[in-house]
Image (cartoon, rainbow over all chains, first blue to last red; front, top):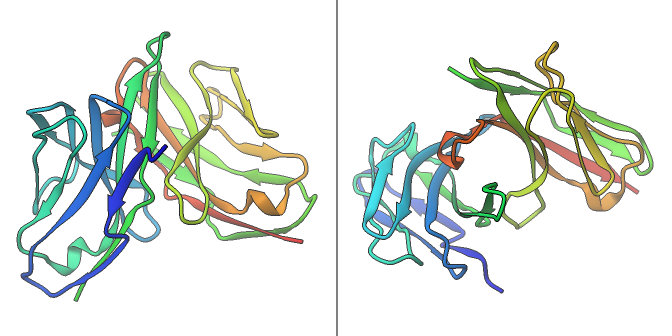
Length: 115
Length: 114
């Protein structure tokens, strides 16, 4: 029962490097999300997807890209890492229950430092 | 825009103490209110929620009441345990909107000492 799996858990990048944060879920959820959490701040939505092939920007999309080629996977790409992208990144997926309530499941997070 | 403000942490208590973590919000509509909890090494998970004024959400001994007049949703527990040590997030979302509309507070780290 894996749920939402994020890799890596920790990463240090140099300014200008690129990397992909992986997120996969095994619950067949249509909705997936990427959030970032800066120290002392709430989670902010970066991008989200309502199904394979469909993505949309959240509140803080600049400097990031996403793709959703399958229902299971929702990778987040940083092309030119900047110190402002130092943060903890959370992936989440969700489904609607029989009462149309959204049930959200989070991964355990990726701590990224850009130096 | 909508916002959520939580009590500053970290909070440290002894086992069996009473807990209150304050949460206030500003919103233009009539939001649903949530408390999420993140245990060490795990992702956030929903603790409880309330969808309208005067509703009380409860789970695992925690309670929170939706107070429209004071725009608050304080988290309370009468007797905390070491296993309650975690980070707690208050959040809101417009009724009927998806998680893409969730607005989170900054989180409050709670440590319970035996």
